[in-house]
Structure formats: structure tokens, C-alpha cells
Amino acid sequence: MYVIVVGGGDVGHYLGKQLLDEGHEVLVIEKDARKCEHIEEELGDICLCGEASEIAILEKGGITRAEMVIAVTGEDEDNLAACQIAKQKFNVPRVIARINVPRNEKIFAKLGIECVVDAVYLVSEHIKAETMLFPLTRLFSIKDKGLEIVLVRVGKNSPAVGKPIGELSLPLGSVVSSVISHGEESQIPTVNTVLREGDQLICLVSTENIDLFQAIFRGS
Amino acid sequence: MGCGRIGAELAHLLDVEGHKVTVIDVDNASFDELPPDFSGMAFLGDATDEEVLRKAGMEQADVFVAVTRDDELNAMAAQIAKQIFDVPKVLCRIYDPLREDFYSGLGVEAISPTRVFVRLLKERLEG
View 1 (cartoon, each protein chain N blue to C red):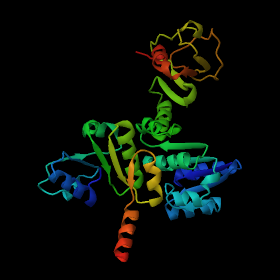
View 2 (cartoon, chains in turn blue, cyan; view 1 turned 120 degrees about the horizontal axis):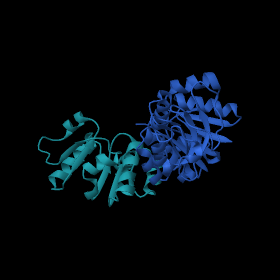
View 3 (cartoon, chains in turn yellow, green; view 1 turned 90 degrees about the horizontal axis):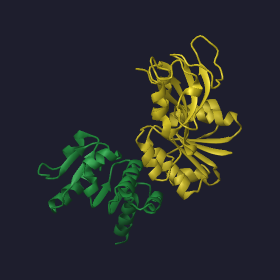
View 4 (tube, rainbow over the protein chains, first blue to last red; view 1 turned 60 degrees about the vertical axis):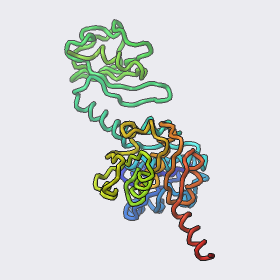
């Protein structure tokens, strides 16, 4: 597949390499000549130096035959412009934008760019998971299905302590797929698995039920 | 939005004509461009932030003009004004002449200074 990556910073560089490794044809558009040079030293002749929201640059980069445009610069307005032009002017079938300011997710959606990856949110959630200070962290969102894969911790004195999973009033459609107890192998639970304080659970839950779900495991 | 030379001059002219004008910029020092007798409001903040715009009175605005040096920022703010706040008239500066038509198609009036200036030069040469 021909993929255009907009932005040759750390994310664009890494993503470009991964796409090449998978056998895709990749072009990285980056305005900073030094960054282009750095990428080309490692990955070969795959960079175009210029502003990816300029129509002439996109045309030079073969946008008309691109099947995907991924905009991952650190500037949300640049990612929006590149994605809008790719999608609305050149009919690129799939566009994905990185956003660096969480509030922009809604704005991008209203302006026609639905597929966004929120960098701040993702990093924060993963750090939250590592700290073990939060009852619930969101590991992955399946946005178009309204589902989330979450990591929850059974808090001290939470309603779930000492109960088998089958007796918890989990919101409909939730699945507990793995239970990790301290110092033990992780296990695939049954309805009879009894939860202990500090257990970590990997679960699938619908986005609208996250708060309900969290309340069951939150300690006091 | 954007209190550089163009933004400040436009704000001044509209202010003199008696319009109610608010200038938004992320740089406090940029407001020095405004004349001392400017009677409008100078609002410090990011004009791509809905909350900032709301506080700056965007819901009552009849016109929004984006004239920072950054095409992409102008385009984004202008679209927020049009699509989210439903401002009746939205203008933005887009240096790239090829993109002028694209953004005009999205409901905001984009003006390319490059194109305007070239036209002006040509007219002078021919005149």
C-alpha cells in the first residue's frame, strides 16, 4: 500500500520504518531539511522536504495514488490541514491524524476528520497504568464499536473484594478476560474466580458504562 | 485573530468606523501594535480553543477574520468559527494560492495575499 506520512519527527520516523518493514511503500513529508536527512540516512530515499499542507507538495508526493495519509506532526492545525486536503481534495480513502491537544478530537470530527489518535491521552493512560494509583486505565479504544479495553485494580474495601466474578453486577456486555494476582501467573477467569484486593483485571467494556464499571472496583 | 501588522491595522480601521472589535492573539506583546486610542478589546488566548472563543464573545460575532502568519492555524480557526459558532462571515488569510479555492469550498472565504499582490503588481505594470 502507498502510505504518506506527514511529519518526520520521532513518531513519523518510527512509523515510517515500521511501515517499510511491513513492505509498504512510504513517503515521509517533512519541512525540516535536517530531519529529512536524518531519516534518509537510516531508511533510504523516502523523504520529501516541504510543507505537507501545500497542494503542490502533496501533488509532487503522488497524493493522487496514496491509499492512506497519516499526519503525525506536533502541530494539530498542520495535521488537520494535511488530512482535510488529502481527504476532501484528493479523495484519499483513509486519513489518520495525531492530535496533541485533547480538546481537538471533537473539533476534528466536526471538521470531517474522525480518525484521530490523541497522543497526550494515550501516554497519560499508559503512565497511569504503570503507577498503579488509579482504579481504571483505558488501554485501547475501539471507537467505532464504542468499546474499550481497560485495566482495573480491585481497590481496598471495594464491593468486588472476596466475591466471585459471577456475583458482580457488571454492566451488560462486559467481559473480564484476564485476572492478574500479585506474584501469580495471570489466569483466564471463570464466574467462580474470587477476586482479591490488588488483583488487576483486563476487561472489555462499553465506553458508556465505564463509570459504572469503575465503581464496582473502586476502593475506599 | 492575529494581532500582527495586518490584524492590528484592520482592527484599528474597524474600530474607528464604530464597530465593536475584539482582537485575539497568543502573544501579549503583539497588542503593542494596536494604537493607544483603540477602544476595542484585546483578548489573550488561543483562537482554536472553543472556550477561549466563547469567552471572547464569539457567539455574538457577525464577522471573524483570521490573519496570523500561519496558514494552517488560520484555516483551522476560521473553520471553527464557521462550523461550530456559525459566524455569518468568516475570512482567512492563506498564503498558498492553490489552497485559496480549497478552503473557500469549505465555507470560509480564503484570501491569498500572494495572489492579490501578484494581481496588483500586474495591474501596475500594465497601467
